[in-house]
Image (cartoon, rainbow, N blue to C red; front, side, top):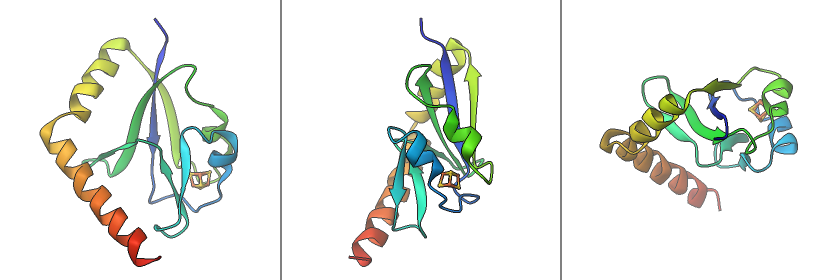
Length: 115
Ligand code: SF4
């Protein structure tokens, strides 16, 4: 069983230095609609912490993204298999799905307005 890790992204803190994209483009993507910040690909917004989260296997991310971020906006921590399962349930809960749907609609609207 591969080890599990949780990536936590504080988008408020992000200054758009883009080191994360250059070190780990599979997980980080440009978000030009949002003040030149980045997005954590398929990240789930946590309305409680106001941060984005994603659980990945050990071979699905580059830890350099955390190390090179100049404002410590990225945290990557190892979690247990049980916690990974709990996180998945949380991410699929009605409240979280709705919060993320609203967020994506706002992002799509901002993006369309800028074109
Ligand atoms: S390295 Fe940090 S500050 Fe730079 S874009 Fe990525 S998250 Fe934002």
